[in-house]
Length: 307
Image (cartoon, rainbow, N blue to C red; front, side):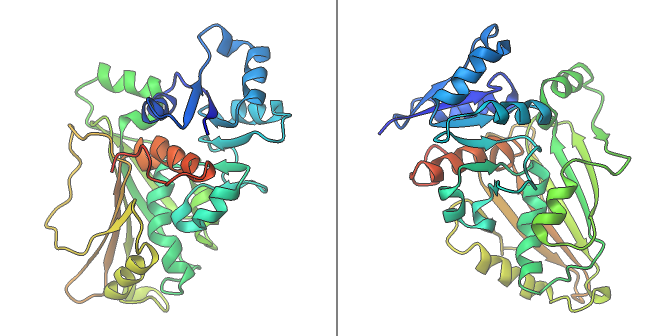
């Protein structure tokens, strides 16, 4: 059975990569509007209500407006914006954390943020298992390829090749923080320090843990074992156990929809570094949207993914 998919915002980076992953797949017919019609609310309303699935790749307010235009109860929505990530009535589109069946049965799915994906993958299972405290002021350091900032940041980075690192959200109000707190069940908002580096794609998210100072925190080995159990059998998330002297982001990285998790520890086991490595445009955006679409359409979740 062929399903129709309308990508609203298909001209953006996330929309383009979703369309690439769906290209040539017989399960879906993808609809996009040309430059003139995508600015026409009547044309958008028609497309939004005619599709089996709608994927929103829009700014937050535009995504809310798009949802308000949908009057056809049979239309199912995946929103790649921040607008609905903590909203009631929306399923958080992280099947490895919330459950594949929850996503498969949902009418409204909110795609996780790219940084949030790494943080939540590391922290949510461990807090849920009682191996890390929910009432702790977690710090999250992260760097991303500049494609995560969309067309404007891509243009800025490519026009300024001398810029290697760009720190931002210095007012500590990054839009991913609410979902990071809510989806991990934390009593305090994490202190989040994101930056963009001079590579097109790729992301590293780190949570340092002073385990000896944390009440009821488990050992690094127990943390790793718990993560391995949480993602046992996952075709997308891999918990690495082998030793590494260093981790790299490469400037020639190819699209990848997987997620790697690491637990590093000091020799005395009093400190640990939890690290996630992913493609900010893959599991951090477009790949996650396609994974969720597959589940909602009753297909194997990795169909069309790059793993």
